[in-house]
Amino acid sequence: MSPHTTNGVSINEDAENTYFQTNPSPKALTKHQALALEFIQYHLENAPDRRIVLVTSGGTTVPLENQTVRFIDNFSAGTRGATSAEYFLQEGYAVIFLHRQFSLLPYSRHYSHSTNCFLDFMEESEDGERVVVRKEYQEKMRRVLQQYQYAKNNRLLLLLPFTTVIEYMFELRSLATLMQPIGSRALFYLAAAVSDFFIPRDRMEEHKIQSREGRGGSGRQLVINLDPVPKFLSNLVHSWAPKGSMIVSFKLETDPSLLVSKAEQALDRYQHDLVIGNMLMTRKWEVVFISRDGGERWIRVPKTRRSKSFSGIEALVGKAERKPDSEPVDLEGG
Ligand SMILES: CC(C)(COP(=O)(O)O)[C@@H](O)C(=O)NCCC(=O)N[C@@H](CSSC[C@H](N)C(=O)O)C(=O)O
Image (cartoon, rainbow, N blue to C red; front, side):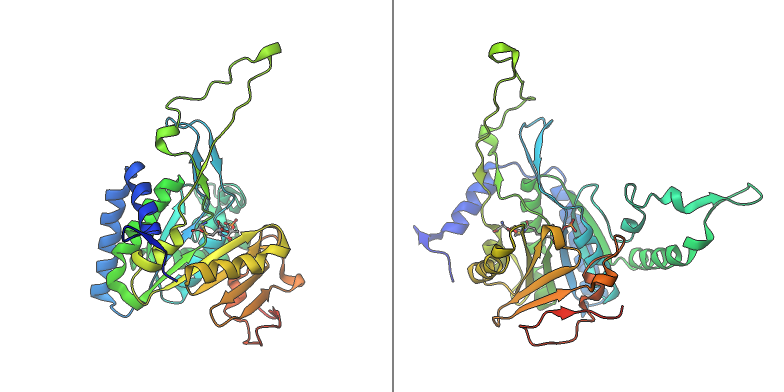
């Protein structure tokens, strides 16, 4: 479905040009482009058959002031992206991990500063000479450390941060374009929670918005007027991404009655390969795959395995037996 056009330029391209011309390019973009180019060229030269996946992860922000004190955030801890990146690495992919700055990262997510503070896994040795990992955690930490070191030493993981939705859009367009030489060995796995609305630069306050005293001493109301973020997925599918690459997006809903239809609408609108639908409250243990062959395939983690520390659906998706699309797949075993 090609976008309709005015004066020969597709509406998407028109919106794209306006968006990228009227918003500032991220300060780190040139550096990230150089890192990504080197990463891609390294694998093209040393492992030409290796697949490369761009995983996006974490939530984008919409600043309210140019010198940002306040911003609107999109929910995402980065668990989906970071966990999935580990499984892609395990499957032999090279991973470009475009992530919200300070959100969870592959491997270190197991010992993150907030949920699993690494200091809780350490103690002083009996002779008081050294700090060591407590015995009960050594095996698992060794496995994670070995996987992390393997990825790092073989240059299989490139970590690139973003914060705002504008940074995200510039980075995504730039990385997709740089990935074009990879062709059909490129995969896009869009797990980032992307803002749908933003404040254009020319309407943004420069300094911190003052909560001036209103009548009777109460603060005045703050009215925020947001514009829609251009629907970038169409541009990714039709012009930025390499021909023959695979594009997977995620659809997040909170109303179960909307999830499948909205995912189907996204797939129909953007004509990419797969939409993985998930509900905010159940995202860690059930997803629905909506694919181009009209399939709606639920994948669920059995109740017995839905522990808080469980790394999520990704750990088991690979083990889902092929069942008729209509039947949800309950994943037994681990
Ligand atoms: C964010 C989560 C739920 C993971 O959570 P954590 O594990 O805590 O990180 C992820 O699974 C997800 O649904 N990500 C996608 C969420 C999202 O924003 N999806 C967009 C589609 S991608 S944004 C595309 C843009 N709006 C367009 O239409 O072009 C949507 O639902 O609309």
